[in-house]
Image (cartoon, rainbow, N blue to C red; front, side, top):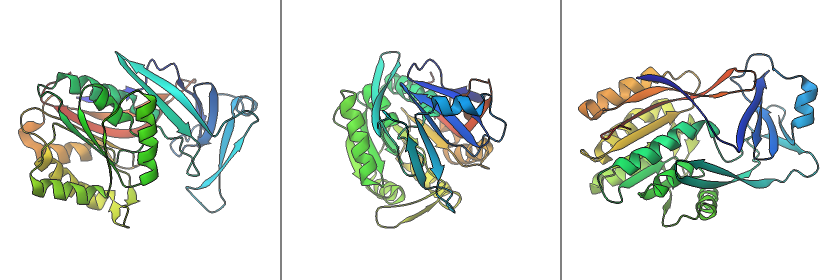
Length: 297
C-alpha cells in the first residue's frame, strides 16, 4: 500500500509556513525559521509575519550548504523541551540549535513513531529486542522502549547518544543499551554472532562518517545493510522500518530492495512518503519509508 503520511495531533509542533527554500516551525512556544531545499514555492505568509514570529533564524555561512549561524531574539533559549503524547505514549524531548540547522528532532517522523509503538506492543515475544541504527537523538528508540522493548540504540556520534540519553531521562524511561559505533561494522558483527532482533529501525543519512572515519555513502552501502538486516531479523515475530531522506531516492527503490531481500517476510507492508502540512495547506515532502511486520497494525 502506497501512503502519504503526515504529522497529526501534536500540540507542541506546527509547520506554520514554507516557501522560498525556507520553513517556519513552532516547537512548543518558540518559532524557528531555517532553510528547506524542498520548499521551492512562494511563502503563504508575508515576510513581515515571518520576522515577527521567528524567535530564531538560521542563516548559512557563505560558501556552505550545511553550516551556519542562528540569530536569536531576546528571550530565545538555545535549548528547551517539548512534549509528545500518543495513545498512552508520553515522551519529552530536549531541543537545541545546532550549527547544521537541526534542532534535535525530525517532526515528520511522528507517523513512524506511532507505528513503532503500536507494532512493538503487538509482538508476541515478551520484551522484544529492537535495534535502532542511525538512531540520532532517540525518539524512535524511546517509542519502542515505552512499548516494552529491550532496545539497542546505535549512533556513530557520542554527543548525539548523550542527547538521546537526556531525552530518555526526561521521558522517565531507562535501561536502553547505548552504542557508539559505525552501523555497518556493528551489523556485520551481529550477523557473525548470530544475534537476532524482533524489530529493526533504520534512518540512514545520504552520507556520513563512523567514529573512526568509516565512510557511509547511501547508494553504495544500503544494499549490503539491508541484507545484513535480513540476517539479524527474527523470522517469526518481527517488524522492520526504514526511512530515507535523500532527494532523488524513490520509494520504489526501497520496494525493490525489501521485496528482493526479505521475500515472503514482507507482510502488512506500507511504503510511501512522509510530509508536513503547512498553514497554507502545502505539503512539504520530507522522506520516503518502507515498513512491514508479522503482526499488522
